[in-house]
Amino acid sequence: MGFKDKFKQQYAQTYMNKYGDRLTQVQGKVLSIKVEEKAILWIFHKLLATIVVKPEGSKSITKCVYKKNRWFKKVTFISVLQGHNVVIQGLKGKKGKDNRENIEIMNIRNLTTKRDLVPVEGAPKVQRVRQDRRYR
Image (cartoon, rainbow, N blue to C red; front, side, top):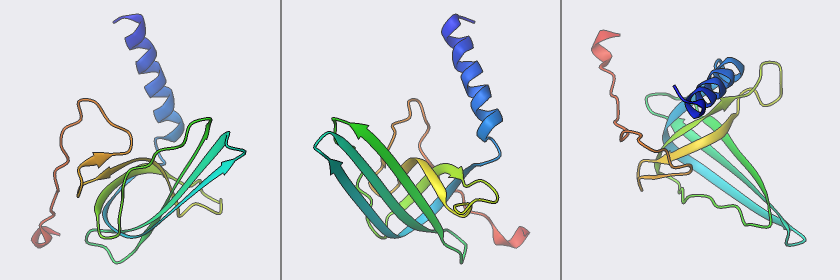
């Protein structure tokens, strides 16, 4: 194993130890989306996207938030519209905090347009998993 591989493995292990219990994934239809862009003095750009998703086979809804700040360059975001099927990968809020029910978005996979917010190399195509309700 080379130096780069050891470094990547150590980084991944540390990340899993810190956030492993909070990692989550939601797949479903987008009920609503709100994207707010703000520029401060044409130098500092902020993006806040709030997405409400109804998971497949569930009556509940999930609120997901994506925040991004960048200097000098405008922040980019993929096209997500109401009714699109999405897979959202992110972190649940910490226990005891106000945002414990929200999901902090790390990546969005739009299954309708087949686009990713953060492209993942070598990732297999997402296949829908249908659960057979007879065996529950």
